[in-house]
Image 1: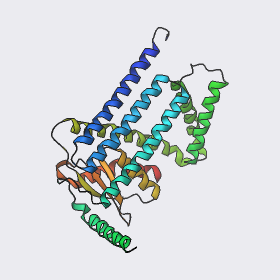
Image 2 (image 1 turned 90 degrees about the horizontal axis):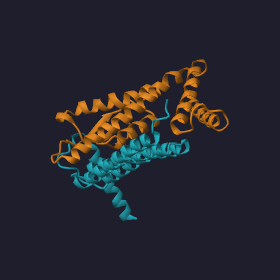
Image 3 (image 1 turned 45 degrees about the horizontal axis):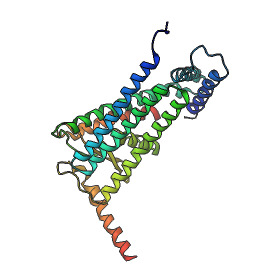
Image 4 (image 1 turned 135 degrees about the vertical axis):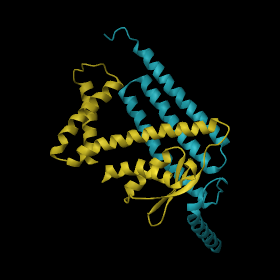
Length: 133
Length: 165
């Protein structure tokens, strides 16, 4: 029943589509890095676009080789990317807030005022302490 | 969680042994290996009501959480991609203070990770008393801040609470 279907061809088509989609997402993320107006929005674009891009490229690779051990490695890489990239993004974002990187002027900061005020005043204290040392 | 890890290891080793020493009726490739492993996990899942009742309900919820998360990831990526490729910005960024109903470290970490991976939203900090998270988001429809908060609470937070409580 399955003898006259060319499985290799089907696999190649599926994996090519996945890899091309991943590359396109990464390209779009790179364009977003250049185009977007402020630091936080740029970082949103680049970290998430590349996560999805890496996931799609690796899935395509796993489909092409079609072996359990390679699939296991692919799943591990995707899992660890999903675990680590948001942590990096979160730490970079918080560091930027603490270093007073400005937001885009159209950003609605209404609910964030208290936090910014507190954070920046403690930051100033910290600097003074360091000078004292 | 322990039950899940034990079942996963049993299914993994079982599938491996089946293809290495058994007499497989199916060709050796990735799709069949995954199918055999999921079948073993499904059989083990059917036996759980006798010794670990909550796991029986939790596994479907965990699967639905993962499916929802992947769907959000792709949909939000397309939304950001559209904004990058068209000349005008449709986005209205805002920093929201989302009130939390999750309390433990694990739940807050899961929520923060999922929010950060979804494009267009970025966790900045948890408030000192753990009542709010500060979240930078790109799309607030019609300046309706409450609706955007509700979206987060209904989407990820409710599913995480379903899973852990």
